[in-house]
Amino acid sequence: MATPPLPGPLRILIVEDEDLIRDTYSRRLVHEGYQVDEARNGREALAQARKGLPRLILLDAMLPDLSGFEVLKALRADPRFLTTPVVLFTNLSQHIDKHQAARLGATDYWVKSEISPADVVVKVQRLMADAGSPRPIANFSLVVDSQQGDAAALAAMLGYPRDYRCPKCQGALQLQLYGDFSDPWSRSFRVRLRCPQCRQ
Image 1 (tube, rainbow, N blue to C red):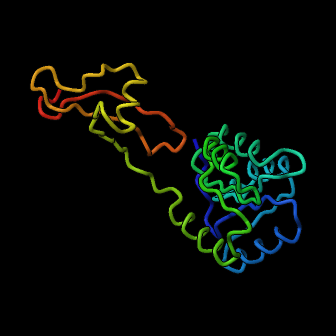
Image 2 (image 1 turned 135 degrees about the horizontal axis):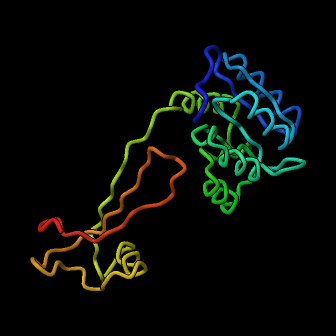
């Protein structure tokens, strides 16, 4: 069970091995009223996070010991940080790096060369405002057409029959995906084919 945040300034942890970058963003965020902790490497980041329980973590991907991806993986394995916003803040701009960050549970991915200190402040404010607001359970329905679209390909991959017509009314079936987005750690859906007319 996560420990509730203590009253007072909202705590942010900046993990960055470059002193100038870390100091620049730390000063700017302190000026905006945040309490900022700093870490220069991955192990220090994990120790600081477990001690201070920050409300948001800005995490460089390239660190001298553990990588930011390893730190992120360790944080998401700790129940206390399942819902804590963790942003990869890095010079790595390749799609594969962004994909890996998303797969490990990063809240967002910011490329340093594409964002200014003022932009960072605005983004941090939005993340802090949204933190703790549960996302609703969401269901998705896709009309399955055997002739086109990814829904048909997904149905085929899941082993559903190629005839996407209801055996009773011959109406178009829907491929329904059920996912609980109130749990940011969840990456799975329940899937079924259903007839919206016969409700079967």
